[in-house]
Image (cartoon, rainbow, N blue to C red; front, side, top):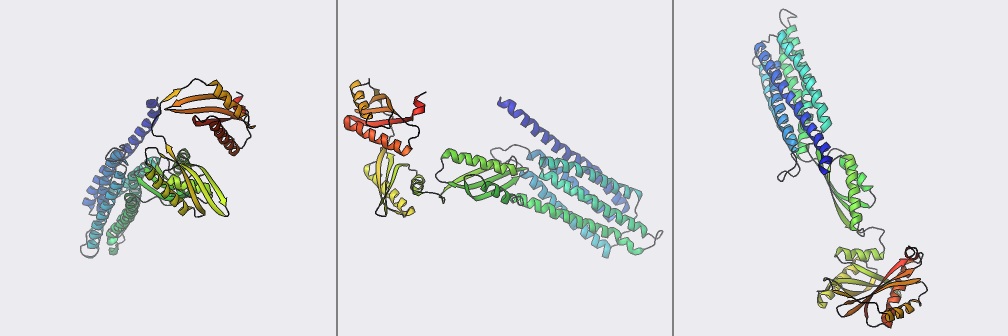
Length: 481
């Protein structure tokens, strides 16, 4: 069943890898052809514009090869050494491409300045020169569209960089064509305008400016990705959505990083400290879904932090302090004694602790409660032993005389409609009793507790041999089934 369920996902993943590799490999083949063509024509015509374009295309070839390699590696699944996957290789390939672009610009600017001011080179535009530049524009238009389509489909950073790169190549090629046209017009056999002979190196400088512009855009994207910069505006949008989740008091930390086309989000959220573990997990699941609505398929880690909240009452604050120290207090009672609040509570501690250690523990807990709840004047804690061993129990046959005697006592409590399932057990040398008592459905829980406590006391008074009494209360409707 699991293998069948995962098959569609595996098929989609393989389709993605195939498309990304295919379009990257086609780009490599196109770069090989166009670079060789430009280089031959540039050398034969002596055009710096075409030579600069040949250098630019050579760089495109290297960039296309790096992109092909990066998309092959980036799609590998995470492993023990690369726990966030291999997506960063796409960002790194874009970083290398940026550096190569800038090196190309340096050479173009150097050669253009030399031809403008120090060494004039005669340019002989030919039909081949125009053919190669128009062919370059058509090729760049084709592969930039193909790369952009696949890049957007699978959110590939490397393919996006290549698509941006090749789309700007179209404009740089157009500038070179313009330079060649102006050089041809300035020829003595044409308009005879000697100053137009500088059109070719000027066109090369314009190409360099285009390359610098492309480099700057790639550099910003690459550096942001390598430095784990969050997508613009996404962090605040996610924080807003997470803050709206029921139960979330606030977002303490929100970190987002990207590796290739995969996002990783790390959040620390504040929750009410009296939430149960199960409820906290439910809130965490809801927060994860809210994040993935904005960043689909993101790997989300949510760290819940318990926190005091404004709506806590006195009992919540007492239990909150105890829970912070990994203690569970129960039977908490607060009395107002002439304007001073007195607290009584029960605390279970490991039965293997000594009285001295237990008392010291309680003293520290009471001091912390008074510090956090200054309204309290005094605290009295009843120390109970928390069982740490499984007791051997010997069931006893029902003692009809004792059971009848206890049932007679039940009649003293009008709220108890019925008492049944009296079970006596021998635990060590002690006698235990458990029974079920039926009470009206509408009886308030506080009154149920009072009645069951009073009944327990009366049972022990009537039968001192009873060490422990457990009374299970149930509603009248449940008892009728």
